[in-house]
Every structure is written in structure tokens, then in C-alpha cells.
Length: 276
Length: 199
Image (cartoon, rainbow over all chains, first blue to last red; front, side, top):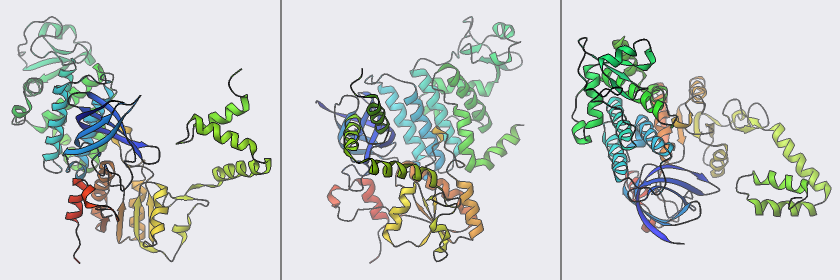
């Protein structure tokens, strides 16, 4: 049984047997790792709070048949503010579930994806409590960048049907087709006119935000200012796009609305009534 | 023909479904049961059926009970102004075992997990709020596991109970009795420091 070390973020943890815990991690050098921590749920376990959800830890593992066995763990970073705000927990759980449900190949490392998960968790952790729109902004950024890393990103600069460069229509609208996988030029947009589910018309602020989401690095994106209503619409569009093109079956937008809205219902309903 | 006689194989398969029992343990149990007298087997099977038929969830606190309302909820001598919220029915027995708590309970039978579609309705939060209002509760004790999922659910509970303007407390977390500080992890130790008590 060979042993190895890994620096990883805990994406999911659940009970196994009487006192064990199964932990699903995303590591810097080994990609997804499924491991078991024996006796981790006992009050006097040597792991203590080290194997808690969303922790960034330094692990020592022994390779096993189906699950590796965690023999030691040290905390590198604990995102302690996440459980103190239910919405933060919701967004971090969403990020974890997207990574796990994409069925990425185990042992196939993607340092870029690792960095993306870490940056998003860190940002959500450090955001002010109950600032749901900033949290939504991070989640939206994660979904966009995740689509890009996994090769599902929409085509933004050129028409996704004929390839011509995109120019703004006289009406100030730009068509976006979820099914076609990106924006449409005026000619292709006209041919899809009678198929409402084939295209959505975007205003310039919406288009710019989508463009920023897919092109900017996080430190640049953080400073981008936009209206909350624009973010809400773009988040919905990206979620629909994500749901259509991947086989994750996670309806990110409705998921958020069903749960996060319970606490933040007043803020959300105010924004929605302003939109209508 | 398989490795075992059909009736034995069926029973092994049934035992294998139980938590913590693998094929070898299942086989061992079945071979043990073969040696047991028919009278004892009958008692064992009757106990199983009786348990399934009689045990139900208490209509008030969702603890296990043989009647509509459990013994704890019926006990008028208990402190009716305190409700302790726990995750599983097993946690009630653990807290009762301390003998230090004489209030009421509310069993959630799970924790909030949006991704698994477990929302406030699934873990009986509306019923809890109704109870708090009806009983004019003075204190709610949140006794959920100190995990991220448990604490997120506790945060959610705090947010929904707070408008009712009652005292909300949470079980302390820190060093386990008999443990060594040397082996405590940073999170546990920092909580122990934060929640230290004046002597």
C-alpha cells in the first residue's frame, strides 16, 4: 500500500459506518480524491475539526482499493465564516456539487480548477455577511470560468452560427442562443426569430457582463461594477446555459431562489418588483 | 445451484442490507440463527414486526414513540418553556443520558441540504416555529453537530427564530474531557479559547 501527500479542498463529506467519514476532495496535483477517514466522527478523533467541509488541508493518504485512507491531516486554511451565513454555505455547496457532478476523471489534475475553487471559496468567506449579490457574483464567475475550463464556454466575440464578428444591432440588442452555444449575428438571429427558446435578446450591459465573466481574471472582475438586476438576469442565463450543455442536472438559478431567498426574501422581492 | 440453499441465501441478502453488515457478517449471523431454537426465532421475528407496527413519530416533537405523543411531550413535570433542537432521534437519548436537561425536544430528522433538496419544510421548521409560538417558549437550545452542515442549519434556525424574540443558545464546543491540548486541532482550540469561562 503506497502512501502519498496532497494539498486539497474538501468538497463533500458524509458518514460511513459507525464513526468513519468519507471525504471527497479536489487536490492541486491529483485532481479528485475519494478517501475514507477512520474514526473521524469520534469526539476524540485525531482528525478533530480538520476534515470539515470546505477546509483546505495538507493530507497524508494511503492508496486503497476503491477509497484511499487518510492517515493524517493538517489545516492550511479554514473558511470559518461560511457556516455563519446560510447563503455562503449554499453558494459553496453549489460550487462543490458542480465539480463533483461533472464526473471529472479522478487523478486528472487541473491546477487551474483547483485555484478557481480556492479563490471562490476564499472570496465568499471574506465577503460581508448577508451580501447576497456579491456572493451571487462569485458563484456566477465560478460557473462561467468552470464552463471555460471544461470546454463548454459560449462563443461571445463571433456569431456562434456563421462565425462573423458581432456588432450591436440598431435596437441596441444582441441575440444570445443557449442551444447554438453563444451570440448570434443579426442575419442568423432573424432566421431564429420564430423559435423563442432558441434565442434571448441581451442589452449591452448584459452582454458586457457576460463578456467580462468569460474573459477577465478574478482580481480584475472583482472591481467590475454593474446593476444587481443585470447580474440577476445574467446569472439566470448562465445557469440555463450550464444546465442545457452539461449533464450535471443542477438548476443553479432555481436552487438559489428556493433556499437563499428564504432569508433574503425581502431584498429579492424588492429587486424583482423594480424589474417588472 | 448457487453456493447456498435458496432460503439461506435470501436471509443472507436481507442481512447484507443492514448498515455495517457485509457478506461475511451476514453469513455468520445466518449460521448462528440456524442453531437457535424455533421459539427464540419466533420471538425475534415478532419483536421486529412489533417494532415496525408500533413505533411512529411523535406528532409534536418528531421523536420516536409508541403513541401519537411521546412520553417526553406528555410529561407535565418537564420545563415546557425550553426546546432543545436535535438532528436525529438518537441524539435525544444521548442528551437525556446526561440527566442535566429537563426541557422538551424537537427532532429535525436531518439537516438542511439545498443540493439534496432538503429544505425547511423537510426538517419540520414550520412545525417548530408553530410550537415556539404556542408554548410561549423562553429558550431554544440548538444541539446540532458542530460540522459545517450542522452550523449552517443552526445559522438558518437562528435567522428564522430571532424575530420571535426569544433566547437562542447553542451547545458549547471546545476540548473533549480527558483529551490532550497537544492533539487538539486549530479550529477546536480557537473555539475553546473564544468560549472560555471565568472561574
